[in-house]
Amino acid sequence: MKFGTRAIHGGLDYDSATGAIMTPIYQTSTYIQEGVGNHKGYEYSRSLNPTRHALEKNLAAIENGKYGACFGSGLAAIDCIIKMLNPGDEVISTNDLYGGSYRIFKNIFEKYGIKFHFVSMDDTSEIESHLNENTKLIWVETPTNPMMNIIDIEACAKVSRANNVMLAVDNTFATPYLQNPLDLGADIVMHSATKYLGGHSDVVMGALICNDDKIAEEIYRIQNSSGAVCGPQDAFLVLRGIKTLHLRVQRHCENGKEIAHFLTKQNKVDKVYWPGFESQPNHEVAKKQMRGFGGMISFTLKGNQIEDAHQVLSKVKIFALAESLGGVESLIGHPVTMTHASIPKKEREEIGVVDSLIRLSVGIEDVDDLIKDLEQALN
Ligand SMILES: *Cc1c(COP(=O)(O)O)cnc(C)c1O
Image (tube, protein in one colour):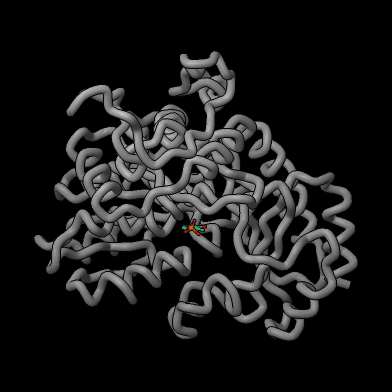
């Protein structure tokens, strides 16, 4: 089955009790057992809930995986992956990544004796130079946030396989419609379903998808033991969101392309970062591993003044000043004061997150209106 069909039907059965075409919201904590140990597969909703279960199967279907697991947030999903490790283990991570991922690595897990190396992954040389016998996980986020660099997942998978290390990919920005890391050799795919999968800025959720039976067993063990699960109402909302994922992302890509090109022609704009530009590092890899370039764009202003960036942010009328991304509505953000405030200034600037950097999550409104809005805000 092709993507759109899988998004709508993948892993889903109609409700056998009623024939309801939509997966019901099973708002229940527990399940009556017919006799001791005799139940219908559901015992307690932290362990498994039918609405969440349906979403987990649907997510596996759209990421070409065997197993899906949902969590209360993207960070709770990341938390689960790191809990598979032990004190003394080491992780090699992308250096240009979601601020919250950096924070959970540094501020939560380092004190439990796990060591993190943040390296450039333009090629695999820095990964290889940081590998040692303690390395257990390579953490990749591509396109990176907010610089939109592209990391070659297949090349990373070659290194991880050769060294018997797990490879996890945060696929939040690309979505399963544009990129499938498991097909490229990754062991685990992670999503903040809060973003494009939910797609309507009305839910916070995370997900993991994998193929390996042993990894899945560990994920479900930690999901149940740590208990960071999502509720059935949220699972329902994300199931509904995924049914239009392919249509939405098509429009995000179209609008993103027009706005990225518009920005390059503006006098006040200095650099524009978007995976579809040939000037973007590893653009050739983007063409190979992605089926489109998405609607996430970052740009800087000439003179690099923080006041100028704030001015643009305060003048937009359709773009909403807000954290997050991936919803139907366009959002604008300032990484230095918002999403990336938890990363020290020196580390931030090394990767290009400078004072005037502005990040756009281009929505699916009419693009002419979005361009007019940016035009008046810039001028
Ligand atoms: C938002 C985000 C996360 C964290 O997800 P939450 O649902 O906010 O916990 C992780 N990675 C990326 C790339 C994100 O954009």
